[in-house]
Every structure is written in C-alpha cells, then in structure tokens.
Image (tube, rainbow, N blue to C red; front, side, top):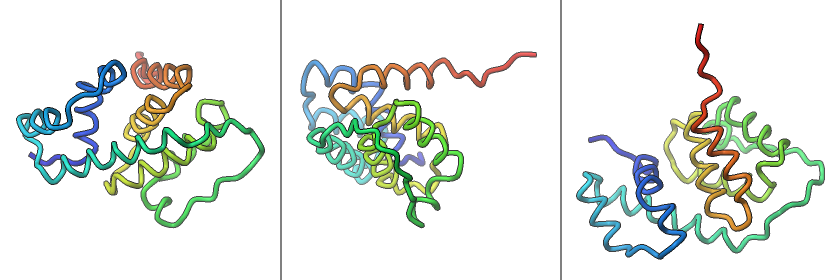
Length: 157
C-alpha cells in the first residue's frame, strides 16, 4: 500500500477530528488504529507531527486585519502549489474565508506535506483542516465544507 501523510490525515479527519472537539483522543490508541488500518509507523509519525504543528497555530492571533497586501510565493512554494492552487488561496482570502494568518498556516501545512503532488482537492482539504482547528472559524469552516461536499463543478448535459 502506497500511502503518504495526506492519506493518514484524511483517515484521521474522517474518524477523529469531529470527536476530538468533544474529547482528547488517546494518542496510543490512534497510533494502534492507524497501524491496524495498514499505515506504516514512519508515515504515522510524520502525520502526527503534522497535526501537532497545526495544533501549535491555535495560539496565533486571528489576523482579521484586511489591509491590502500582496502575497509573494517563494520558489519552493511555486513548485509545490501550481497557479490554480495559488489563485484559489487568493480567492479564499479575498472572499473573507481565509484571514492572512490562516492563509499562512494553510501554506505552511501544505508545504509540510512534502508531497510534491498538491492539487486543488488536497489544498481544499488542508484549508478545511486548518479552519477546523482554529477557534472562531466556524462560518469559514462551514463554507469550505460546502465547497468540498457540494462540488459545484458537477455539470450534467
């Protein structure tokens, strides 16, 4: 099975994220469940580190200021995030879904995937995870959920 950190994050999001709001799940049990699901110990460690680093961002200020600014992407970021992904991040920020702080957290978490294959769907999921983890972002989180699950690109002829 060829899995990566993102696959584990998706598994955890589906099985634990909503419950984690109510209680603090046992890390050892989570690791055991992931091993039982067929993930490798190495990738599990990377995914849990990714989540720990995301959790540390909860202490950042919300960054609700809307001063006009241009985000310049680094060379590494432009290699990981194609034009469509960068444009979507800008769309989310201009639409008030992402604050500048949340945008930076999302970019940081995308880069931490070290995947090399970040598409728009992965970006949307990571943004949802970021918003879900940040206090006071319920409305933005609901908007992202609708965007992910309602899939406005489905056209019938």
